[in-house]
Image 1 (spheres, rainbow, N blue to C red):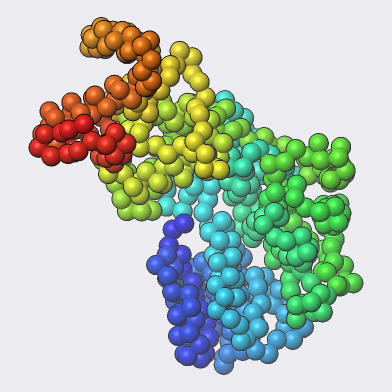
Image 2 (image 1 turned 120 degrees about the vertical axis):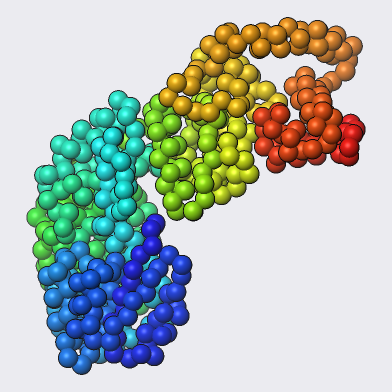
Length: 517
């Protein structure tokens, strides 16, 4: 997430000092103002992402300042603070678009919690999501990346539905980019100038989800010390994204159905019927038709949500998009981390395209982030990849046609040579370069008598791995050739120094000017 700006408006300098102390962090710039008039001038010049503002101030008070701010930009996230809250002021503040209402005094934990949520919402609204495959992302832009047929169908659906008010159901496995699709629909819709609020239904306890969505009245339940608006009020005239809607209880589903039918809802513990002009986008990784058959999801809600259905493909189903995704993420991570990203060798790229990706695009991004932060060389080799899936177990790759067992260096025997950089002309299959390159035929010929010796030894009862024997011999030879210089030996072998060190430890090799086994 890029560096964001937060404005705190309060006529008490000591409060501003304490506020800064609680929220100071590298990725956040905190501005301050001591009056409504000063705050409006800062908003005109800087357009901060989030504003925390006291309700009672000399001159232009918080409520009047809020109204003028919302006239300037209806997407501004404004949190009002006061020690003198009343029901009427809260209602008036929410009517004019306040994001949240904090009663003073409040804890640092509460402040960080509200600020974190508000900054995420602001980022979602400000960061435009491009879904055009050839679009080049710039500052303040994210992209859905891929040119595969599966993704072209997704782009077509986004383009067809964005300008309408139709409810959209986005389905697919975790990590496939469902929220990005929802945000792309929002950014390219007629409601893009209004609020966008995302709610993860699986992350909020069921006992609190209704309150989070619809708000609550004072005394509605233990801990409800005042009236609180829900997301449907905060997102008025905008768009609400209900993520993981399959995790919602039947009781809450009934209330969501009512909102979709006529736009009406009631706060928890309240009797007043409120109206919401809201576009609803929903997503789930669960099988809703199966849940309907099992009685865990309402069929009428499903049909209300499923006006337009967008199915997200898994990353394994669009492996041809992986080079584009790798390029996109490495460039973005280079900007975020201010570290030069390594190049990805053709052998490593082939391994990435052959992997099963249980965590989908999110897992790929995490693998690349790890590479950028830990890379010790300027080229990624197969041995540098950490492909362990979401549960930490080592997972196998999807087998590609003609692929053989992996070698001791963790790369397919049919993989391209490790020093070949990835390019548009680099071979994407592993067999052609082996057939064409005479050097590999020479190596295959040289290996034949060694292979026969190992088969004979195993026939006499010796138990060993032929791959381990060959790998150990190659490492010994390289280290002896380079007089124990591990950097040069690793380079000659086409692996990283860290991989070489692990192999040295694995085989118990002793290093000096001559290497001993």
